[in-house]
Image 1 (cartoon, rainbow, N blue to C red):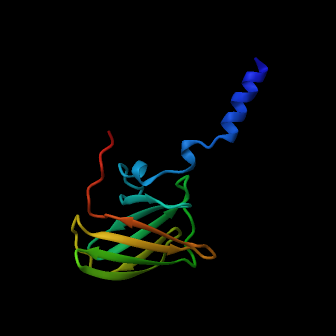
Image 2 (cartoon, rainbow, N blue to C red):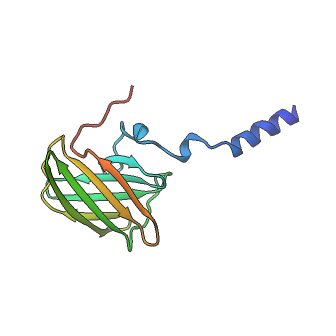
Image 3 (cartoon, rainbow, N blue to C red):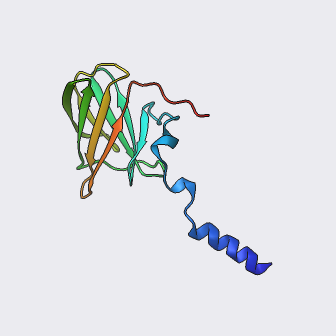
Length: 137
């Protein structure tokens, strides 16, 4: 019985658990702590809060703990049909980047975000900020 218990403990320690990373499909049905749309990159969770005059991108690790954005750079590319525009994102608060500009509150609006944390590699993700969240089944 001790051998079996040891194997169970080892399996729990060595096998990755579902809390270690989330996919965009798993995040699609939930809103972030600030009411924005959530997305996952390889190393981060991103929450985009969009208003008609600004974008705020909140940055978290995969445990949803705030990640400092001091020294980070970012860019949001807005895509709506054939129209394309960009908004620069600058560090804001402790774990966010913010940019201002005119955003059409259209469910078809797509926002491609590029983010580079200080000393890090670029991360990219796409959002549909004005599309209603997908309900979980």
